[in-house]
Structure formats: structure tokens, C-alpha cells
Image (cartoon, rainbow, N blue to C red; front, top):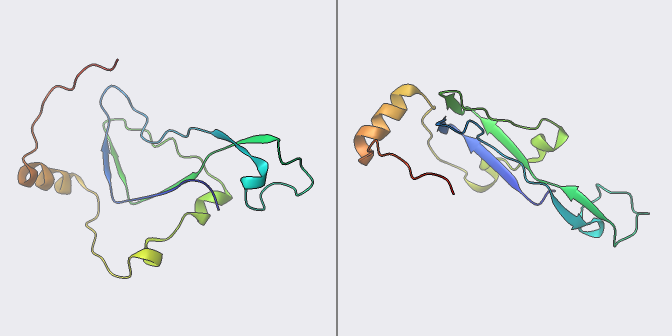
Length: 116
């Protein structure tokens, strides 16, 4: 178990100037809060940097968007949508879906404000 689990399914990520889609932000936590990932003989006041896991399934990355996903055993530990949502429908991510969403949601091509 990890602090953060993100399951991204059939999302459309389109890059602008910034290309990174997922950014991991390791955080130091006391080792006694980690679940069986740290040896039990370590001191409880020692801190380890850790971050959660992201699993991307069927996502579409456009215009140079870079997922920057970390691979490892933890990816498979990310929860399954079936555990929480026994039935649902999902449209596969595609350029056609992007166009339908833009048409039906009132999307406008507005210039974004500059980052601080």
C-alpha cells in the first residue's frame, strides 16, 4: 500500500508548452508509516522519501505530451476500478472523442494566463 494511487484510464492529455503529464513528488514520511516495505529493524524516527504509483491504461498523449511514468512492482498494486465501480461505461481515448467533447462541452480556444 502506498500513500497515493492514481488510475488514469482513457484520458486525453494534450501538451502545450509544458510536456510532462505526471510528475512524482517524493515526500519524506516516518518509516513506521510504511506498510511492510521497510525492514522492521529500522529506527522509527528515520525518514524515507517515498511517492505513490500511477497506472495509465488506454490514455492518449498528444502534441508531445510525455507521461513520465515510473515503472515498478508498485504499479500493479494500484487499485482496480472494478473494486469500486462494478459497472460503468468508458469511451476509448481518441482524436474523435476529443473533437466530440470540444463540440458538446462549450470548449473555447482561450489563451492561458502565464505561469507565475
